[in-house]
Length: 127
Image 1 (spheres, rainbow, N blue to C red):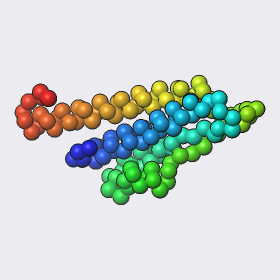
Image 2: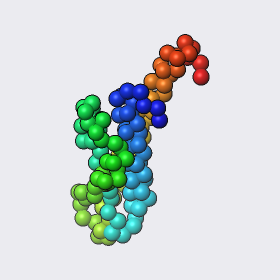
Image 3: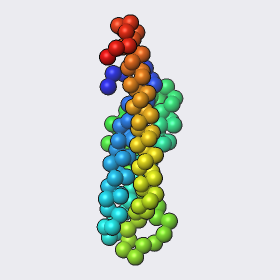
Image 4: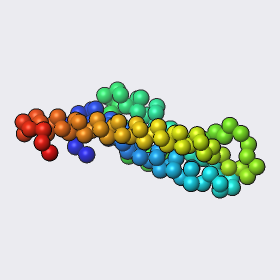
């Protein structure tokens, strides 16, 4: 992705992390009936909050966060299941829908920023 300012870098990080989170949430939903499956999620909200500081954007790369920290945390089960599975299918579907919506907002923001850049270069908003 073209990076021309800190906002674009943060949007790139958001898209990458939301995509990884969607993979985890989808895996949780798919394994809702698997005995002893432990639901997991990506704890990146704090990362994005810290990334709003321009200094942290220059020092932290999304790939480093994913690869070294992993960011993957086990979801606390609000109840004990007989088979040891911690997936709450309804909650996972809700989180997945919210995550997709936020991904779409970030993607639309990138599209508009690229449109502004295209307009600044060519003087035309045509693709």
